[in-house]
Length: 117
Image 1 (cartoon, helix red, strand yellow):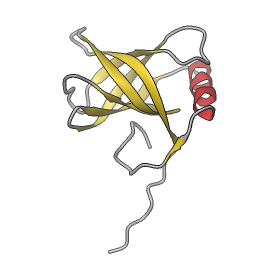
Image 2 (cartoon, rainbow, N blue to C red; image 1 turned 120 degrees about the horizontal axis):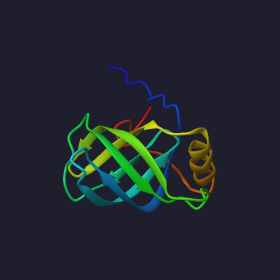
Image 3 (cartoon, rainbow, N blue to C red; image 1 turned 180 degrees about the horizontal axis):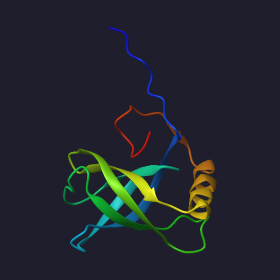
């Protein structure tokens, strides 16, 4: 059986960002983002949040003048590592993330390791 390479919409980049994730019950979880892309990110949290859950993210990238507050959906969960896909992001926020990513090291990782394809 042949395997095909995973085609992604956005390249992934290694990073090291603190992040706050708020669930629908308005519980905040302090986490750590280690991979980011224009379409989402990967974050380690102290507790698991179910796949399909909608969460509010708050994090800072140096290329954006204010903290980003972006809605996302949990796309995968491996242990406490969550793949989150942005669901509401403005073009200005996306541009700031793109500019930030351009300053980072491209990450070569398998298909299940980040928030969006």
